[in-house]
Length: 256
Image (tube, rainbow, N blue to C red; front, side, top):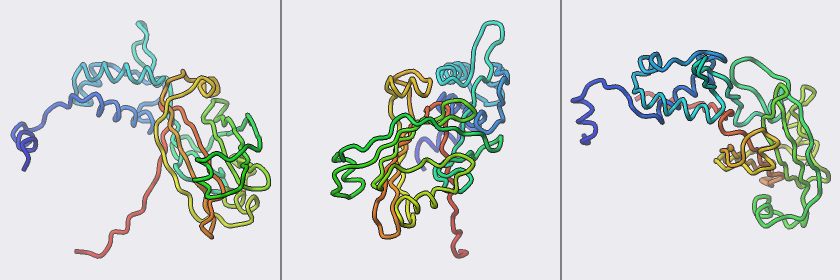
């Protein structure tokens, strides 16, 4: 047994003082609707409810305010002011094409604003990701809004004869059908990577966030049944207000 575990066993139940853990717990509460919009966040109540310290609560409230999830004023105190949009990490359903709500509140109205569509020279990175010698690629950039609020910037690089449709409106028949129409092949695999990047001025204006703010960056490569990559897309989400959710089914295996 490690010394840290020995100390924990001898100390018994203690208050948690980590602002990192408290921040994650309260963000989860906002995301799940356990702390709804306009809910009052009282310092003393949070200290008791989360068995934590005053310093941890104050640091957490400052971080949440920077993320736009709470507002703080002398007259009203601290209240939940924003929500976290929970989206499927991968969704190819006909209902939403490649975008779906997984959290509370049901489906929401999406709309897309096309920023640019062009045929551009293939860069070394895209040549590597798409494994092609083709000298050009279609690029289309969209701004997607959810209930009128900017939600994401989506950039798609495709090798088809024309730029691919987005397919997040109600009439969409799903990503698999769009892929089949565009490339004449079946979609077999999606390779996905998610990382954090900082926001530039242009994207900040589109998403309504400050330059330098954290963004979630998701890269996906769409691969057909023959193992041929057909497109690469990049999605940028405001890091403070979007979560990406995946559910993994686990085979329990044979009983011991």
